[in-house]
Length: 136
Image (cartoon, rainbow, N blue to C red; front, side, top):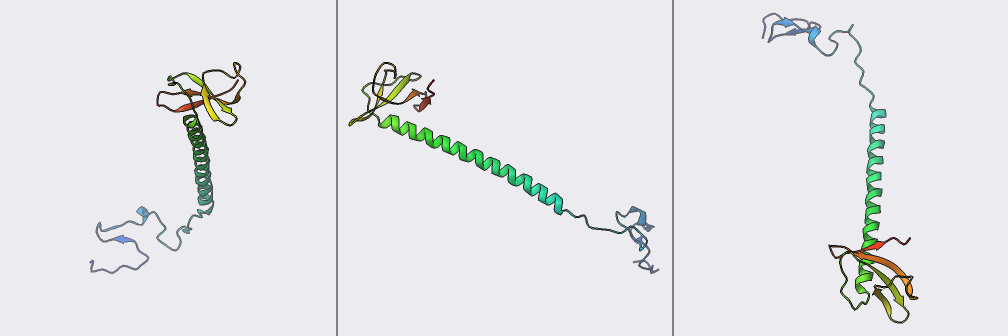
């Protein structure tokens, strides 16, 4: 420590042995600019709102995907539980009908070719899942 004591208002760096007030990122005297903390409340609120909106959009997207997947699961269970007496071919479209008293059955006949209670049409995909075909 230096033998010479300096007053508190003098900014002197003992290591470099220099007056370095001009290097400081803050005021070093009572006549220097006032240091006011930045009010970040507005920035935080905007950021929180944007993040919450993004998360809510993602949640809505996941809910929609979940509902779509559950519909596909329901359709696949319905087709696999239906009765049919042939081995379905991948890529072909089949038609699901409801026969009163007998339940669901899968057929090669289109709704135009028969008078059964038509449920929906499905295509067998390569991964052995059934995909509902949109009716025109």
